[in-house]
Length: 537
Image (cartoon, rainbow, N blue to C red):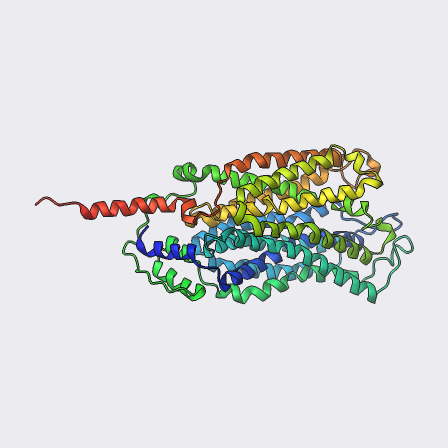
């Protein structure tokens, strides 16, 4: 590698951990805080939406969202996220990380507010506009995945890179926690101000008119943390690796890095900056890329796809878990706001006890034991606990065994986060060339969201029992919870196998993992050979 960029990249790899590294974690992490809040807070308000807009006079139970509406409201953001991951991943490599980074945050702010301002008072108009804005909210969220991961990997030093990228992703746990806490505060405030009877006592009065403000405020709150970090995101310079390796301006890269990392660097502008290196010019769909990174991309896409099938479908069983331990009593024994309060409280407890700790175990250990070990271990234990829940499922349904079921269920969440949910985000930001890094991360993340769509929709229907009396209204017969859990166990087992395609990046530089060192070494040898040739007279 030519002296200019090599000097800059070596300085990045060996730089001591400084305050700016933590600033970058907060700036990038608040995007993921918002992402998780916006994606998961909808589960708190879906039952309230059913009570408000789909109440039927004389019904024994409160109104619920019809299956097609429920699927759209819960899943449309995933569809937008998938599209955003592909688009902004590609755009981040074409225009630069910094130019695109603020765009995604602004989309999230606008669409979070717009989701809460969904128009009309008729079910069709409210749900249509809610789904429209949540799609574009997901589009902005999708852009944050490849850009935040790539920016953090390119700022970090070699020694603590894994922990820094994982810390950005771990902000998701706090976002999920905040969603539950905001739901608790808002629903408790409205409950106190507007007391209401239970549905059994008075069906019409159990859902107060002011409840329409509750779900809107919960959704709109997601705009606040994103808006607060917009200024600092715009102040971040372009990453030195992108400037040096893709824009080919090592002098500017050195200047940018000196401003934020408090190191003195001088790099001469390279004479050959306008010409691409021969060995380093292959594209995403080239034979050379397939030869070097094809199996790696297959590994990152399949493991993320399989992980998200299991991870997002776990959320489908939460209502059964919450009911089993008495956190959520039957719907007809509560009023609308009490139901929101109890669902939010349950989500907060799950996040506090298993989700958040799992993320931070990864942060503290990823640079000690490596990505590969954590991912294999996570998939393995998720498989074990899924089968342990599924095979003796009838045993767990007895009242005296329900606490054990809850513990096992929580452990699957813990090992998802202290496992592949974190590592599938980290690794794609480390193993691909700089000019394709954001694109490949976006492809890997989009594959994951495709898995989330399968998990959120496929298993929603699959988990329905064959007995019509036990089935949710409007759903066809499925294979039941037991066999759905067995399928999830098999999915996790496949994750163990496909992890074997993913290389270990712990302790290695980004250029070493992407083999850009080799390309530039060959280029230097060729230049030296040309300079040393003699010309016959």
